[in-house]
Every structure is written in C-alpha cells, then in structure tokens.
Amino acid sequence: MIVSTNDIFKTAYGKFAVGAYNINNLEQTMGLFQGCLDSQAPFIIQISKGARSYTHKTMLEGLIRSAEQVFPDAVFAVHLDHGDEETCYDCIESGFYSSVMIDASHEDFEENIAITRRVVDAAHAKGIAVEAELGQLGGVEEDISVSEADAKLTDPNTAREFVERSGCDSLACAIGTSHGAFKFSGTQGLHFEVLQEIQKNLPNFPLVMHGSSSVPQDEVERINRAGGNLQGAKGVDDKQFKDAAKMGVTKVNIDTDGRLVWTRVHREHFMEHPENFDLRKPGKVFMAEYAKFIADKNEKLGSAGSLSEIRQNSKPL
Ligand code: G3H
Ligand code: 13P
Ligand code: ZN
Image: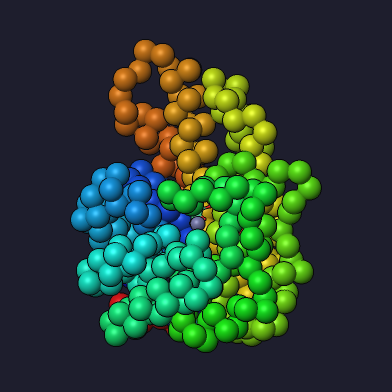
C-alpha cells in the first residue's frame, strides 16, 4: 500500500526513524520489499534522477506497482530523491509520488527558499509532501560536488525561518555526513549538538539525514578480498540512529550500503564460480542478502515491528 510520507512521519516522529532506500532495478526492489516485510517495517522507496535515467521512469513505476501486488502487506511511500525543480514538477504531475525532494541547497538562502516555495505550492495543490535541504553535505550529490572541507552544516538559527517561509514538510539537515562510501575524514562524526539545536527551533518537525550508510567494515574487507579496492571506506555508526530519531530525525537515507552488498555478492560469486555466466545465480543471492541487510537496518533504525501501527494511521494514496 502506497501511503503519504507525512502520515508515516506523524506516527514515527520522536520514536523511530524510517529507512529511505534507493532503488534502480528489480533485484533491489525485491530485496527491499522482502526485508521490510521480514522486519515488519514501513519504508520509503527513493528514486533519484540517476535512477530515472538509468532505466526509465515508467519502468521504475511499473516495478513498484508490481511489487505492491507481490507484497500486498507492505506499507511504504514513494519519494523523489535530490530533485531539481523540473524533475519535481514531472513527479508531481505523474500522480505516482508520495513526496518529492527539492534540493536547492547549493543556492543561497533566499534563492533556496524561493525555489522550494514554488515546488511546495505545486506539490501541496496535489497533496504531495516536499522535503527541502538547508546546509550542504560533504561528498558528491548527483552532479554537485562539495568538498569535505567546504561542507556547511545546517545553521540552526535559520532553520525555522527557512521552514516557515518555504512551507516544506521535512528538512534535510547537514550534520556531518556525506554521500558515498568515504565519510568522516579525520576526526569528524555526527554533530548531535547541531541536531539538538535544530530540534529546539523546530519542535515536532521531521528532519532527514542524508548520507547515512554505515559502510560495514566486514563488507568492505570482503569486497577488497574479492578484488575490489575500497581502502579507507567508512560510514555512519548505526548505533547512533536511535539517538538521532529522538532528536527529530524521522527519515534516514541509505543507498551506498545496498551498493556494497551488491558489489560483495557479485565479486565473490564470480571469483568462486568463474565458469558461471547465468546472471540469475548471483541475482538470487543478492536479493536474499539485500533482504537480510534491510531487515537488520530497520532494527537499527527502530522501525522494525511498527508496520501495523503505521498501517492503522495511514490512508492509501
Ligand atoms: O544521494 C544520492 C543517492 O545515493 C543516489 O545516487 O544519483 O547515483 O542514483 P545516484
Ligand atoms: P549514502 O551514500 O550514505 O547511502 O546516502 C544516500 C543518500 O543520502 C540518498 O539521498
Ligand atoms: Zn542524499
């Protein structure tokens, strides 16, 4: 059942965070739905601009609609990840998305508000929620590169004004994470002191943490042993998710970790079975391993076991 992102947030706020997982293909979709049902968790499916052009936006929509039939007990929202204005309007028009993210965080404060406001007006007219971003994450977001050194944490003093003037429904905050497999160079970590201040200024308002993959070290070692080269890869400590959830983090974005599972499974498979050229063999292993990964992540987020509560409090879109 596809539901409103805001309905999920209302139930989850302050209690647990909901995993927002990116999908690009059939195998990720199957593993995601299976893992969320195994852990009885609601979830948010994210589609990036890159995913929409890797396959085709209609293909992804078809995959999700089919998954809804194959897994009728699943309760989830569909979300555009890191949209620009044009892509947001396309998703709003499609009638398929529960929410869109307008990422104008690279613009100055006033321009970020103006762009976000335009998207909010169009989205709210159709009952669709909007995530905006204030502050800049380190690393690479789509085609915008922001060096770790220049990463700008969200300013808690302007967060409230930003939300009030833009009208957004949730706010992606920069609190020290970055996208990809190489986070926290030097002594950086999550800036809970910034998060606490943001929550003080925006009580009961859902906050979003991007760049939240934990980059498990055993996964990295297995990839490297099977011929990969991800020396120095490092992620977010997933024991911190529950504390972050108490401070208002309601959506936690995870993409890289899923890519690591895919890479490990395929590297190991082809190393151990050099004679194989049947794509379904590693594909089958990946779907099962990805489902296990998702179920474990939902435990760490605190969303595991909340499916029936979310179902009761959410209407189908
Ligand atoms: O934040 C970006 C997400 O990990 C999506 O990545 O743009 O390569 O699909 P992508
Ligand atoms: P990771 O690269 O840490 O998985 O972050 C994904 C993300 O923020 C998608 O918007
Ligand atoms: Zn992101």
